[in-house]
Length: 260
Image 1 (spheres, rainbow, N blue to C red):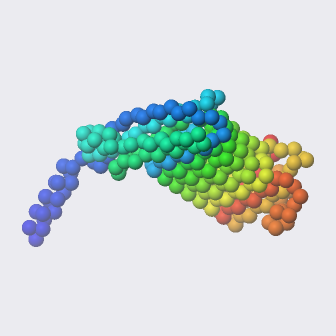
Image 2: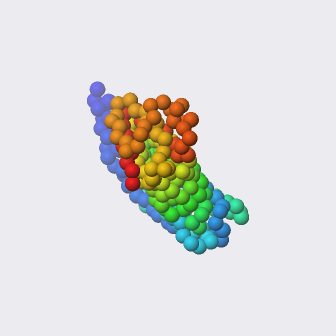
Image 3: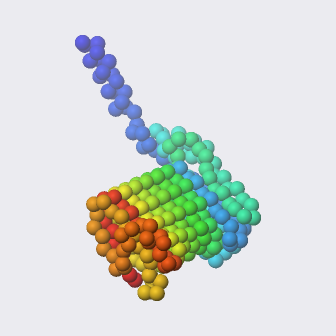
């Protein structure tokens, strides 16, 4: 018994003497500028970092990356951060940004792009933010939020645990999240599909009576408020002659649609 207690005591002493995981960290920055005309495509992948895309009136893409590494000691963190590589592949039609490095490292991006460009983003734990960029955007994050501000074009956005917010003039909007809310203020064109399992839906719709959308809403346990007529059958809504159609679904959340 004494032998077991001694072994346990030594193990506890060993644990207390170890530094807390991730106690030390190191950072470095990476930048690159690429000449790029409007109308192309940008693809960005970051496992754990945030991605922010900002439109400007220059015919160039400017990539800023902040690389962070965590380790038991400062020297280990500095060694790790130096092993991270940011890769920028370019052609006349597309730019692809990605990174590769050891575990417990992350890369966060701020990227300025021409105002008219299509964007594809993938990140596991980071948030995605796009501002003043017109195009067809395909966005996916596992645990982060998605923010789209003053966008014109087509949007496909997916987040498992995050919230999605958007504004602009949006065509064929397709937004889905499991646990997060979906909040938008926009002028719709074409079809709009909104789905969340446990979150609320709040949409402020810019329209006039002539272009009122045909709307179908399905919710199991939530409350519904709409400034517009709501179709009770999805098939009837889809057969409507209206150019703008909404399909809104939530299991446990509330739905609120207002006219702006």
